[in-house]
Length: 97
Image (cartoon, rainbow, N blue to C red; front, side, top):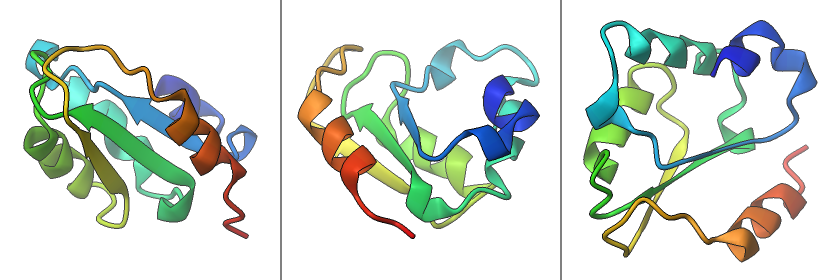
């Protein structure tokens, strides 16, 4: 999120995976303010349904504070692993211009 905040023009697409909201320190949520000015079609979030570090509903509430158009993709897993390379490639390959 620091890169997104400091160099938004250097990012064409952004994929967030396994946002560890349960492990946030005070103020960590403010880092997501960087999403306010991003084109929501160029960002996606993957969050496992039972990720021990945060559930999709928590992440959606956080993200929606800053950009309501960002898609949260809930995946059926109970861990903090994100082996979704085919989904990542599909998102990166989409023409969002």
